[in-house]
Amino acid sequence: MGEKTIRHRILKAANSVITFLVVAALCVCGAYAAYALWDNNRIYAAAENVQADMLKLKPNADAPDGPSFAELLAVNPDVCAWITVDNTKIDYPVLQGETNLSYINTDVYGNFALAGSIYLDSRNASDFSEPCSLLYGHHMENGGMFGDLDLFKNKAFFDENRTGTLLVPGKGYDLEIFACLLVSASEDNIFEPDQWRTDIDGLLDYAEQHALYVRQETIETLRASKAPQVLALSTCSSEFSDARTIVLAAMQPRMAAK
Image (cartoon, rainbow, N blue to C red; front, top):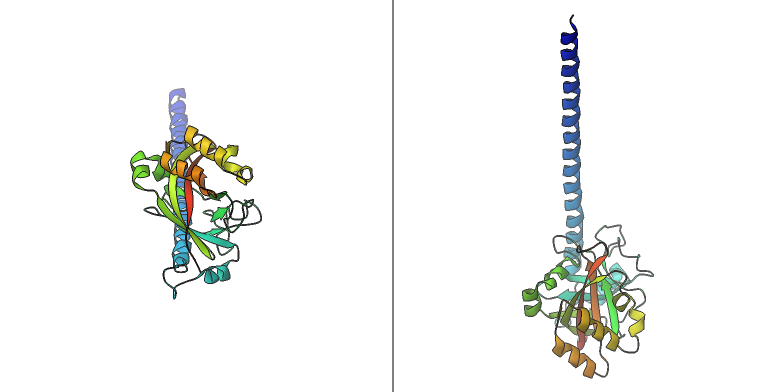
C-alpha cells in the first residue's frame, strides 16, 4: 500500500471523526436548547398558575361578600398587601419575610420557585405606614411579576398610565405613578428606605434630578402634604450589570379593605 493511499485513508478517517464530533456537539446543543426552552416555559407556567390561584382570593373592598385578607392569610400569614398596577400584568399579593431573601425564590405557598414572589423590604413596616415603602419583584420576559415595569420606560406609556391600587388589611391606597428611574442596585436613595422614616424630601429631590420621566405636579403635591407616602417598585434591568428599573408612586388613602 502506497504512502499516498495511507495518507488518504488517515485523512478520511480524521474527517469522519470530526464530522461525528460536530454532529454530536450539535445534538448536545440542540438537546440543551430544548431543555432550556422547556424549563423556561415550566417556570413561567408555574408563576402563572400561582397568580391565577391567588387572583381568586384577591380582596375586594367594593364586594362585601367577596374574598378577604383572612383567606389570603390562611394561605400564608406573611401576606401583607395586594398590589395592582393598571394596564399591566402586575396584580399580586405582597409578602414580607424575615429577610429580603425569604421570598426571592419562594412562592406564596412557601414552595421553591425561581419566579419568587412580590415582597416588601424586610426593614419596612408591614402595614405600609411609613413615608417610603419598597417592593421587589423578579423581571420576567412575559411581563410576569414585575416584568411590566419595563413599560414605564416608554414615555408614551408613562404619560398615559399612572394609576394602581395597594390594598392592606383594614385600609387601601390609590397609587399615582410619578417617576420612572434606571439606577444601580447599590443606589442608597432607593434601596435604603430607613433614611426616609422622617421625611421624603431627599427622595423627591433624587427623583427630580435622575428620573427618566417625572410628573412634577405629583411631586409638588407630595411636598405640600403633611404626611406624604411613596411606594417604590423595583426589578432587574438589562442596561448594565446591576441595573434596576424603579417606578415611584404616591400613595393616597382610599378605602377600608377587609
